[in-house]
Length: 123
Image (tube, rainbow, N blue to C red):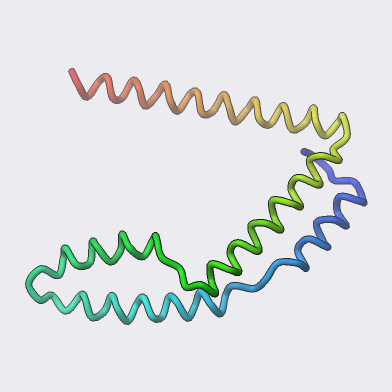
């Protein structure tokens, strides 16, 4: 978007103060996860499959406390982003459209490269 206005900067400062800290909850969960993983890595028969299942499940589970903090923070971030974007100036809109066009071009290039690589592998 380019340089933010003074009001937009203040909104970001205020928005950042509404975020809840998640580091202690995350560290607690991580310590518990490492303990569980350590038990799985004792290399008893079938340990590889148990580790695969545990890793897959880990990505889909959060404690209720961490989920609450995560959802609160995401809501606050989305609201702040909407507020700042909705108040953008015409100059900021032009800058943003230019940046988005660059990202689109990069993605199209990567997609084309992926298709070329996939086609080369099937030959």
